[in-house]
Length: 289
Image 1: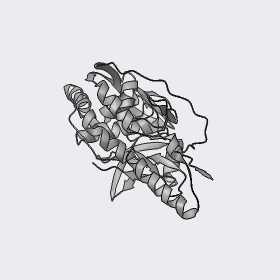
Image 2: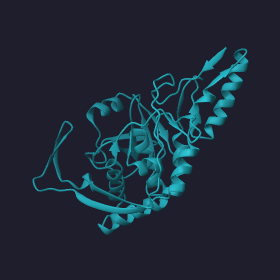
Image 3: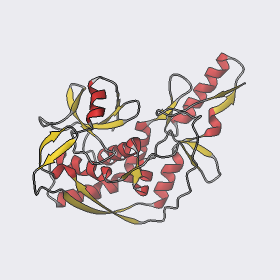
Image 4: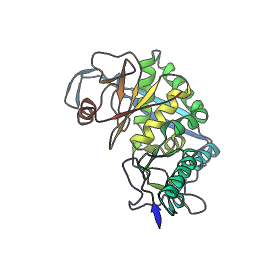
């Protein structure tokens, strides 16, 4: 008989699949333009709506970065496992457990985790981010340089600049699989690696949060953790808080929440999602650095 493994990250392998198109990354230099929402002067919040002082504006940024096609291609090829790995035959329960363990070990070498249930997959956030920090460090330094030219000096200011950079990328949900050059379906648990997100200029909550974490951790700017819920993910950073910040308590410190899917100031997230945090409907994923 066959054991077919569904995948995780709130989706299952049995979902209808959309084949991604092959993309040729021929770019050498890309220009990013964005605004730092953290520089608005907010008088007060009414629910999720910011009441901004009249005449207040956001500081604008432009940054030219070099993205090597070979680095992007290597990062994409390194992440994900062939769909064929998730279907196998077994003779009894012991044989099944052995093959699941073997699959788990192989998957972990490609940024995919087989969860304890034995039939679900998720992204190994630490693997993806650690693999991405070296090739993305030059991009992070260019963004930091652009911020310093605008007289950003404090850690909070710099974090806000990086967050608004990632927020400026379009929100779009990746396919459950990508198709490699041999025509194989590669399980990616519905996420993209940071260099792919940067190159395509779009991503979802997982992909954009991993890009943010890889950028700031590649230059040792700030510690980051992820706040993972059933259908969403926040980043949280360990910086000095203000009275208006929305935070979580972790390792004896207050960590500021950051919503990266759309323009939100650091320390502010949609109230609907904040309710889940207040109810404890999340888990914290610590990121090694």
